Each structure stands twice: as C-alpha cells, then as structure tokens.
Length: 573
Image (tube, one colour):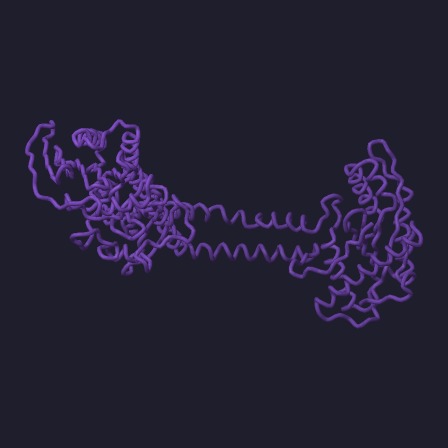
C-alpha cells in the first residue's frame, strides 16, 4: 500500500454534488442570457467576420500567387543559365579531346555558330589565349557577326558578317586594339583554371549591351592559357521575366550577390547608362523597402538555397506582399529572385466573396435563432457528465480523491458553523492480500476485485456517509455519528464485511482482509474562517488517517487503528 496524500491544488477546485447542482442552475441562466446578447451582437459579428475573412483571402491569395511566381521565375532563370555552363563544358571537352583545333579560327567559328543555332539563350561564344588571339561569334539579328584576332605572323583583326543562310555579307579588317587578356572574363578564368567562372554583370564591348560571361580556362597545346566562354545578355532574362503573369502593378526581379539590377519584368523608374546599375539606383520605393543596408534583399539569417521568405509591409500606407527566394545558379554562385505587388491587386474577387459570406451568415443567424431556445436547457447535460467524470473513480464508480476532499471540506465548514453537530470521522482503508491477487492473477482480475469490493463497501456505509477510492487498493470514508465509539464500531463492521464476504472472480474465490486508520475532527479547536483554513484541516485529517493506517499495519493488520493509538495525541497541523 502506498500513500496517496499530497498537497491541495487550489487552481482546480472540485464541486460536491450539491454545489454542482447550484452551479448548473446558474449555468442555464447564463446560457440564456448569452443567447440574447449573441442575437444583439449578430450584426457586429457579421461585419467583423467578413472583414477578417476578406483579409484572410487577401493574404492567402497574395502569398500563394507570389510564391508560385517566384518559384517559376527562379527555375527558369537557373535553367537558362545552366545551359551556358553546359556549353562551356562541352567546348572545353572538345578542346581537351583534340576534336577542336583552337589554332584554326575557321573551325572554331563553325563550331561556335552551330552551338548558337542550337541554344537560343546564348548571345555569343568566344575564345582567347595567352598570346592575345581571339575568336568571337555573336548573333547579328538572324545572321552572324564573327570577329577573329590573329597575332602571327602579325596582328590582324578580321570582322565577318553572315546572313541567316550563312552567306557572306561583308568582311573587313579594321584597326582594333581589343585584347582579350585584359577582359574580366579572361582574368577571372585564368585565376581559377579548370573551374567554370561567372563574371559580375557588365557591358559588353562589342555590343554595348549588359550581360554576363561564363568561362573556363585550361592549358593550350603551346602550354599557355586558353579561355573559352559564352556571353549571356541580361535582356534574355528580362524577356523571360516579362512573360511571367504578374498583377497589374507587380514586379519580378533578379539580383546577384552585389545587388546588381540584373533583370526585371517591367522597366525601372530610372535608368543608368554605360554599366549595370544597382537595385538601390533604379528600384522603386516598394523594392527599396525590401533592401537592407548593403543594397541586397533582406533574407533570413542562415536561409537555405531554395527556401522562401514571405513579407508583408507598407509603402506610403499601402500594404504590399513580397516573396524572396535564394537560387543557386551555379555551385557557389547565388542570386535572389523576388516578386512583389500591392495587396490591392489581389482583391478582384473579394467583393463577391464578401456578399457570399454575408448571405451565409444571415441564413445561419436565422437558423440559430430557431433552434437555440429549445437547446438551451439541454446544453448543460455535458457539464453534468464532465462533473461526474471529474469526481468519479473510473474503475469502481465511487468518489475519487478530489471529490472526497471537496466533501470533507464542506463537512468541516458545516461543523465550524454548527458546533453541536455529530462527530465527523475520516477513515482510510486498504486491502490485505490484494497484492498477491494482482501478482498471481493479473491486473484484469485485480481490477474486478476492486470493483466488487467497492460495491460491497457501498452497501455497508450508511446514509449521509461518503465513500471513495483514493487509488490502488486504498479507499476512504467520511462518517458521521452520535459518538466516536459508535463511529469506530461502524468502521469495524465495514472492515469485517470485507473479511466475511470473499470475492469470487471467474470461479476463483479470493479471500481478503482490510486494515483501516481512523481520525476524528476535533470540534474544540478554533473554528476555521477561510476556505484555505478549511482545506488545510481537511488535508490534515486525511494525512492523519493515512499515517494511522501506515503505522498500524506495521503493528497488526486486519483491524481499525485510531490516530490516538498511534501518536498518543491528535494534532491537526
């Protein structure tokens, strides 16, 4: 037997059946009052609900639409740029395998032209070496522009233009000081041989259009540096963004790690000539609100590639929604794709949704008014069931510990207000031999034994007494009597009831005994005045009965032990 005594939890009060009955009456009254107030507040509730519903629709629609747009934009940009990387790697493999003679500018021009025909994303293909030789094949409308710089036997530049059918249009040999070895794509590739490098966006010398160059350096046949690359005009990314289905005032954009305005779905409010501008130079107020101090979109610390950041913010008092996504266009090269738009762009269907909700709410209000009143008096039935669950032991159907304490506190309160009431005794009783049954036959049989013992005890207690189960094989009783002796005799009779009525489960008889600890409430002590004092006395009584039981069992089982027999005196603190 283990003691189940613990300190009270005053944050979870339990009602006695009488208190619960009064509470249910008040609950019915408050429910009826609440129904009346609900009807009066229906109009206000309808307006508020529709407002909240409209905001939810707005936010959800904006967020999901922008997320989808930024994913499509990021995937398309990465796919477009990955093609450039693949072309560079293919050309490098041809050179390493000896399938492309870099000293034959005609052969190089043919290979480059074939690749431009196959890959529309590319603007041009180029080759430069450490001697200053250079081959460039660039789109020229539907034809081709070919520039070749030879260094041996003397420096000579040849510019050839072809039509769409490959026929010669013109060929000139202009004076040209262009040196590929001074260009960013050449220098950066030579610094990292064998790797595919990306330049920062810049303006191409040949076309004066902004773009980037993807290049890779390796050793030529003469042992010098050989760099092969392709140009990707940013206008191609801009055209791709222009095809994205945005809201009337929405904008999609792409930027790199330096904050360059690489591409946008609509023209920026300002332009910068001669170089690729930064977002801070050309962006509108809605974009600048998304940028941090370094001119880059503010992303979450530690944000992984492919994850998205959703933002809601205001520009001049107008709410905006934005989604930013970090995209890895090349290992180690990360760009940011963003989409933003004013939330008002997403409210085209909000008015119809508002009217639909208004109609639904009006119908539900009418229906609730028709059915609410008949249900008002039935609604407290679940409360009664919950009260029973909170105060009843699930196994035996008796009072549980919380309900016992509530009843004991109520009896102590009555004793304090009526000094001449009968004696109040508290008993804790546990079963002798129950552990053997539980260990031998299992918990299922043990539970059935406890259930039958509870029923037997319930038949033995008197009217006005309270019986409950504290847990395990431990039961408690609250008894009233004319004298302490009469109460003690009744407790002894209850103990004997268990002995003389063996329990039979599944055809097996299980003899049991019982030991009890009994304590009386001393009416001579100062009467408690507060609920806290009453609860402390109640818990003290249970503790003393528990102590009498524990100490008594060590001396002799199968009898009733008075608290005075164990301690010699009855203390309530």
